Length: 157
Image: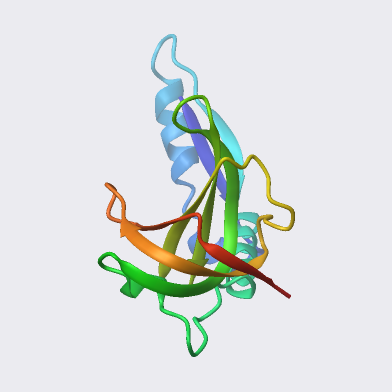
């Protein structure tokens, strides 16, 4: 049996550490052929890691759509749209009839959209993290998410 031993800062440890793992290990060790191992688990490190992730996520929050751009989350049906956001992924996917296509996931603070560029394996400047403005016809995919096929685009600073 493997049991965690949480490690806390000294004062917090006295308040929170109730030695449950020690009591369980004593009881398990009385069972013939059984062994208990207590493994340290650093709670402070976990808390600091979670906090650092939240700070990074807040720093890389997706941009709000500017005036003149349609919020991606508001795109519910087919029609023309202008969207602006950050490019998350750009990957080459197989297309029809032995062709390739570049599929890009673009997000703003309201949602995500897939932009598909048929016949392209790479477009200079379309890299994850880049801000981009797309103009074109929007369709709704089978997954319910909006998509644009071969939209006009502007790479933003």
